[in-house]
Image (tube, rainbow, N blue to C red; front, side, top):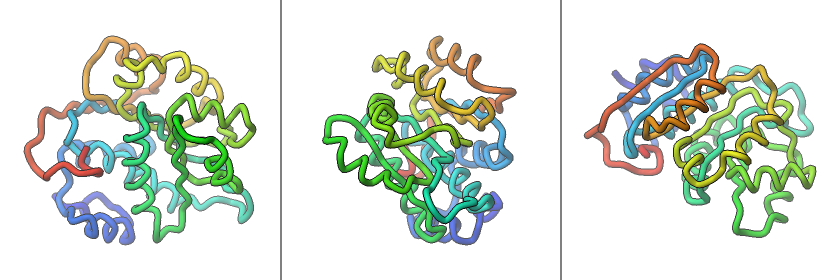
Length: 223
């Protein structure tokens, strides 16, 4: 199978080829089709298996297929929650690369740095936001973001989100989101807390489990 077999737009196929990738990893091959169909998804796969592209490609494609209705403020339609600053930067880099030709705006926000530049970056909105939960809630409290238009939610490394003590903040974020949305949950383990989260969060999800993958050399897209 090649990326061309996944019915991605020509711009996305070119963007992936620019990354030196031609054959999807197992998690990408299994997750991308149902994600493109709008299905909820719970995928368990180890680090290095390619989880980032498995959700990034469907997110960008769905934005391309459903252009925003206004030329003014960009409503946030996709939200990716991650546990660490480092992961936020990595995921944001992949989404920014994929979004260049479609002209989508990606905002990356995390704690440990001044909030003011992030607030400035969010003036006018963003199509997609990659965030750590605490900083996202700070931005909500500053009226810098609204989550009422989110259509696609990704929880990346959900097990680490819970391990690092984000459970309460995660619930606060979830309470701000529309009930009708697509949710994609990615984790590396079958932790009981993740299973409970998936049971409460996902609607008729597609369940995917991928064992250790020996293939592409891991990089920011092949995490």
